Amino acid sequence: MKLAVLAVLSAALIAPASQARMGGGTPVALVTAETMNQLIAVELPSGRILKRLPMPSDPQNVAVCGRTAAIVSVRSGAVTLVDTSTLKVRRVLRGFASPHIPACSPDGRYIYVTDDARGQLAVIGNRVIRKLFVGYGAHHMAPSPDQPRLWIALGERARSIAVVDTTNPARPRLTGHVDPHGLAHDLAFGPNGRRVWVTYDAGVHVRIFDATTQRPLKTLYGGAPPQHVAFDPVSKARHAYVTSGDDGTLRVISLATGRIQRIVRMPPGSFNLTTFGSFVLASSLTNGTVTELSGSGGVLLSRRVAPAARDTAVATLP
Image (tube, rainbow, N blue to C red; front, side):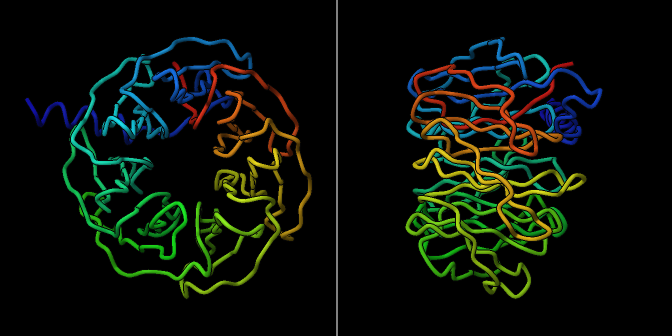
């Protein structure tokens, strides 16, 4: 019976990521409202609230892997798995110390979650199947789009970045550390996997690293720290997007030239962002606004859905 359940969940995780507005269904923003202990499903681009799901206390970050959303509740030490096709809770996993960031494994079969307090990376199927010690403070992480590797910032003000080999996605392996040359906050691999962009908790610049040599190559202005960064999906890779929540800005940067193409005014506190199709989605921790933008930075939706909106990810309803 357990094997059957795992097979069903693995099939859900293997399913393609959101095919929003490409004939694959209705795109829905899944928004964590931590002060309300809810996950809010918001239809895009109408902004209509479809559902509010109760969550264990302090839901902060969310990721969508195929037909499964993983919501991490920090204070309650829980990870909630939600079926994105039905918007129903499938399972709540407990026993974490301070879980923080979820991400998808390279093959889409598993969900990775960092646990700050224990310095661990947890591997989740329909249950926790492995925990790997990577270093205390394990927080933001960046999976590579082209190689079986993962970079994990060891803290919100990280002095070290752990490098993890994910050749066997179910059994990741720590291989080394990178000096971020500052107090690293967020990080993300570029679409071709050859570069890693690192933002900082102190300082206005974003640093770009060579993913192979692990050496810094270039710095760009990113606004007041801490910044967050995301990219167009690999098939449409033209832009990098850098938010400064304290400045209330989003910078659209050309991947070809490294130049800022547009600066968009955002609701204050818009730190976290994600991309889907040719669209960008950001959430405001300060005033609970969800903002959807086109790839070039045009605002398509701005709606307040909660007192505070920590994070968002996009799923597709049938």
